[in-house]
Each structure stands twice: as C-alpha cells, then as structure tokens.
View 1 (cartoon, rainbow, N blue to C red):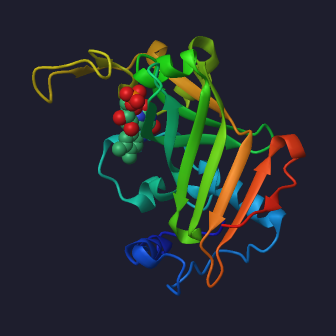
View 2: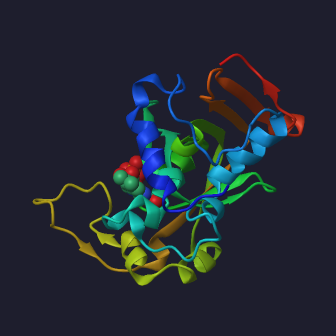
Length: 235
Ligand SMILES: Cc1cc2nc3c(=O)[nH]c(=O)nc-3n(C[C@H](O)[C@H](O)[C@H](O)COP(=O)(O)O)c2cc1C
C-alpha cells in the first residue's frame, strides 16, 4: 500500500469527518479500487502487516513507540494499532490496544508483544480464543481477524528480543507486575527482562472486512477453511 508521511493528515481528516463515514467524504487517494475479493483480501493483509503499513516500506526494529509521544507518521500507529480481544475467566470480554509487530499472510498469523505477567497472557492460557479489530482510516476499512492465540516465551522470543531497541525492552520489565496496585502513579520500576517478553501469536482463521466505499459500502468475509476464496455479504 503506497503511503508517505503527507498521507497522515488526510487520513486524520477522513476520521475527523467521521460521523458520516463513507457518505460522500473525501476518500483515500492511494487506495486501489477494491472491487474483487482477492484485492480486498490482499489490501486487508497489507493493512495488518507493519512491514508494509508503518512507513510504506519495510520497517526497522521495534522502537518502543508506544511509550513516547511520537507522531503517527513516525510510528505508523494509525494502521499498526489493533484492539485485541480475549475472554476473562469470569466470561467477561477483555479488550485492549496492542501494536501489531508482525503479520504473515502465508501462515495466517499475527504477532503481538506483551509482558508475560499481564492479565491477557493468563486469559489466553485459559482460553485461547482471540480476535483483533483494526480501523484503517486511509482505506476507510475495518478488519476483524478471529482466531486463537498462543503464548511464546523463552528461546522462542529470542529473535524478537534481539530485534528490539533498548527503550522498548523496558516495556517488558516493570516491577511490580502489570495490573498490581501501587501507592502512586510512578511507584514502579522498569528494567529490561527478556524472560518477561511474551510474543502472542494469533492465528487468523477468519477475516471480516468492511470498506466504507463511496457511495456503496462493501463487506467481504473469508475463512481459511474455504481456502480464503471469500464471499461478499451485505454490510
Ligand atoms: C497506543 C497503545 C499501544 C499499546 N501497545 C501495547 C503493546 O504493544 N503491548 C502491550 O502489552 N500493551 C500495549 N498497550 C497497553 C495495553 O493496552 C494494556 O493496557 C496492557 O497491555 C495491559 O493489558 P491487560 O491487563 O489486558 O493484559 C498499549 C496501549 C496503548 C494506549
């Protein structure tokens, strides 16, 4: 997907026009005509892939962007940020923003990074059902990716750790553990601990893509079970 930093403002503008999304507002100039099922599927995977979406080119190592006030042009967060849903042991839905770290269309899987002691890890161990929700303003596209997550730690995350810059490593070593009550907002320490990095690998078993194209909204659903052929459904 062709993008350059100047696109960010127009993408923001599209969101600002939000209330009537898809009803006559200025559409993304760089979005291809998504009129076929294979084109929509390819565009959705481009949007999920930080190597494509972060800068419009292959991205570098993890920078710890989520911990600092960088612009979306620097971080690519407008497209790399997803809502990640799991189920808590009491049956309630658990939802939070996570940065997508890698996407592999061939393997149909997406990688996220987190602290191994965070609540979401225990939730996945108890119930691996998981889903990602993504809004891509430039393409006025919503992506829902359903599947199952597994938790990778230890030697399995060595490459992810080695590829991560120092500041980002500090996100995986807070003391006390994430979610622990503390006496004041800053009453915690941060040290880099590789054994606290967990890579959450979510399989993509099904994709549901909604595009608020003008004048007609489009929705396509795909499953691995049907070889990703997909079908159109009413939006
Ligand atoms: C913009 C943004 C990006 C975030 N990215 C991550 C991330 O990549 N990994 C992570 O573990 N938490 C990230 N967080 C924090 C999570 O949303 C969440 O608060 C934290 O992981 C604890 O979640 P849990 O208690 O459900 O496990 C991010 C938060 C924001 C606001």
